[in-house]
Length: 139
Image (cartoon, rainbow, N blue to C red):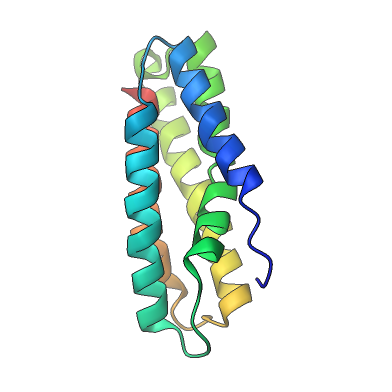
């Protein structure tokens, strides 16, 4: 967790915006707004709960940005098939995407920051953040 790469998360955010643009939605501001406010809030929460050193904002942005990949997959599916109109299958895909993003980012925070005991406390706000991205994608 020493290296905070920002090229991938920025590319994933741009890709998400482009996929939403293909779906007929112009939500670049929402993506960056939720992304920045969510990363700052998660950085605050993680630093308050961290038993070891301080966690940089760049590291939090890197982890949360790379874990945005399943939302990009869902947005890609949404350009071909409207997930909102799939009914129960669409709800299942949305929940699966939120779960995938949450588990992957929480495990990275858990391993990199030594927060094994706080993993469920970390997972809850992360799940809320990714559920906002999934709702932007579906609706």
